[in-house]
Length: 374
Image (cartoon, rainbow, N blue to C red; front, side):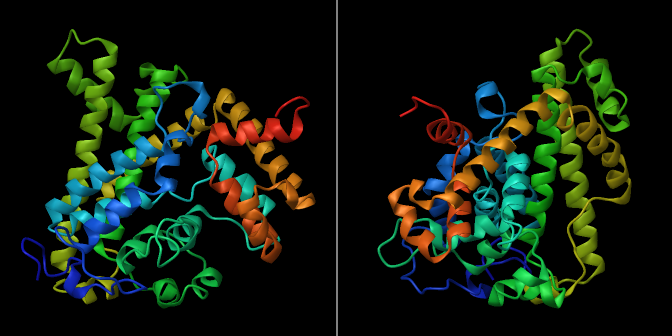
């Protein structure tokens, strides 16, 4: 067992390793190597200019897929350390979980999935896996990043039985109804904690929601009131920050305590026990119920705000236009995609579009549809 890790944590000694064998790294562990490969990848750098909620050109202060991934990694590491599981693996999964996201956030994904409905569909978890397994072109001896099995497993949050059947060992848990590692499970919740709470911050910063509206959500109101009592003269910017950090802390601590209890109750002793148990990581029932109104509020007041929907409608039109143009005439694709398009035109076009940043997609759309654009 690795020093400091619980017996049920993922470690090098119980890992299923890499698809292609490599010499062991010097001066760092295998999961550190995974994290470093992800951070140095082209797909990771592109996240800086991919939408979280607000389209990239709307402002420099809003979160992007890159800042979101960094925030997820910080929360995931904190949870992993408390649970005595593998922090490096948890961090690697967090950095990689959105690598396959399209430009323009979920609106872009929905539009590309619609375009691909007759060709196998499009799902960003699968695209993230496709990115690290084949699309990244950095190493002389293999395509992709050749990541450890458990890192790749953690990237794949959801998968249909049809797609799972095509993934070999990686898809088995979706067919056999077994579980991923603790490190993979906790990342799903670190992602949720990050986007729920940081979307509050971005929504307030944008002016689309107000503090007064948020007070209708009991969980938020509780922490707002605690901050106001302790700091009665605080300005609104600091009030928001203090409230959001308390919300994150409360959810993180609840998750840790609930998961520790689940591990004890299930008598988990090994990684094999984790895989055959029911899902172990999660919130308490009370926290789960407290979060439900917050999710409804964000959906109805922020994600469905008319100004956000207008931008998303334009974004989806861009995705559909690009896909249609390239399907009608694949020679419009950059040369490096043209050969692959001869073998699988729809999937190659989806790879190209999914890899775009918001600003690149808008620029490419102007090139193809605006007279006079170079």
